[in-house]
Image 1: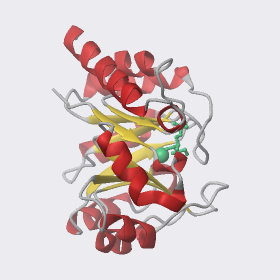
Image 2 (image 1 turned 135 degrees about the horizontal axis):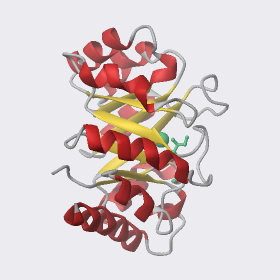
Image 3 (image 1 turned 180 degrees about the horizontal axis):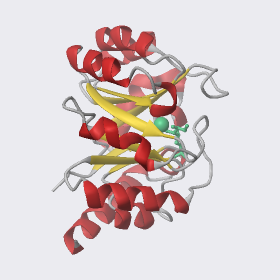
Length: 225
Ligand code: DX5
Ligand code: ZN
């Protein structure tokens, strides 16, 4: 069975205190730290890049789950590998022609390759990347339009998760956008096991409680299946 992984999105953290925010989340029970890398071009927002990952890496051994919302993901592999990124999840919309090369390079730099898709992109578009001899190891199903935290969860994306889970029982399936106590059951029952949560965790008076609840929901639905 695939392990539940709860990944607070550091986009909702206090960036001026990134190391202590990361430590706080890990103390609260986070499995991964989700790092949103945006280039101001693929999405209308600009966040962090390899230098910040490198700084954070000096303070933590945690799995840094990097989500690349960038037009040219290939350009980021080498710097992020050097910086100490753990997972490298790129968007299929930005890598239609070079995903094979991209996956190979990500692996060669010691990172775990993942692919993400925007709400408007059909799930079939990622099948070739899962069936390749050198496959991606995670699929990130966006449940909001990428770019900003704090948006409303799109329940209609759960069809993608269900379809994927049926086809790939042992795949890491991640959901990102609008996840929290009121939406987790939809994602967990559809088969998601990696849960990104930004505003619901950082905005909570007791983040540990939210993280525990998210994990429990994934575990409970796994038991019933
Ligand atoms: C949005 C990012 C998300 C975002 C999620 O483009 O990929 O990781 O931080 O934030 P919430 O959980 O607040 O929707
Ligand atoms: Zn993200």
